[in-house]
Image (cartoon, rainbow, N blue to C red; front, side):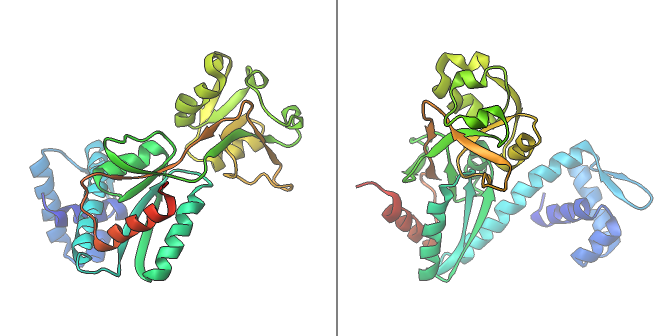
Length: 293
């Protein structure tokens, strides 16, 4: 299976039309059709359902699309890394970042580094800890910023200067908004929104044996989406401070948890990984900014 064939397949999946895909790839339609027939024969599966004016992916085709996205991203990253091996003043670095206000510390390091190396370019992927560490392990990312205790045997780790403060986001007019702090008993039986990671790993540290009185109404990977549901009165959002707007005109308020609950944030990268010169210099920059004496 060739990289070029996968690029052909992805163009068809994107365009949902063989003629348009051939035009974007600058190949003839018979050439493209022949390549896809050969790919289906190689895999032993039908990848497309052909209609009069469009093409639809089969279940096997959708699986290949997911795998091909990672493979092509990796191929592009490898090519970029090798072309940058002799470039000590520029190149690309790929970050995966969990959602947190503390990302500002990484942004400051990047800004300072960019001033020194204007030809340095960075790419940011957002997601929860599970998503970004999966991409890091696959080699699709160089660094990940996570809010879960990292595996020190597997990764190099630097801790961010500050933690993330947990609290409850709710409509400003509700009864709970009159409280200064939120205790576990305040949430008994209420519909709650939270990330799966936070519900599984962080909230039990806060309420100990009281998780059985808390009711998870729904889980969100993005705090903004959870805040929209909270604003509509569907529930209360447990999340970090500063992730969503709770200003005077937002209709929402943030109240910290009591006892206080914080989650640390870490920058990680794989051990024994070979980096480009610009990435090696960036690691030195990170260590200068974050490493404790």
